[in-house]
Image (tube, one colour):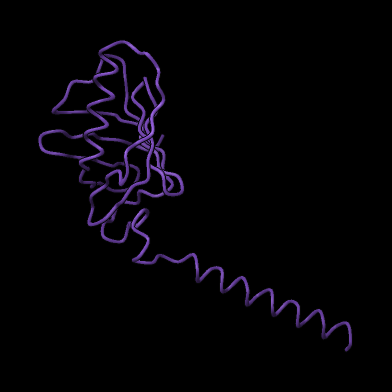
Length: 148
């Protein structure tokens, strides 16, 4: 077989393989951990920081950081890091498992804030917004975040 034909065949196989990989990476309704299709707000692979919180008083000088990477949702509010698998369906973001957490012995007010956030994301928040601005709400609580 001539070398040019082998190279052409190899290139065609590589192109078809890459095409198949791209197809495999497309959004699929069965992937609930990063399913942003029901909401116009992209959540997957983002790092957000709070700019405003209403309906709950944060410990003075603290912010909430929310990030998603792969299938994990991580929440930090200047004390412990909490992380777990998550779902994002119909505009609602929630942990789908008990979050793993660091065990820092922080000020009691920071520990209470961690507990509040753990409950908030375990129950889930409604997500809205556009562009780099994201608003997460649950009842009277509203957290406005932007890209970090």
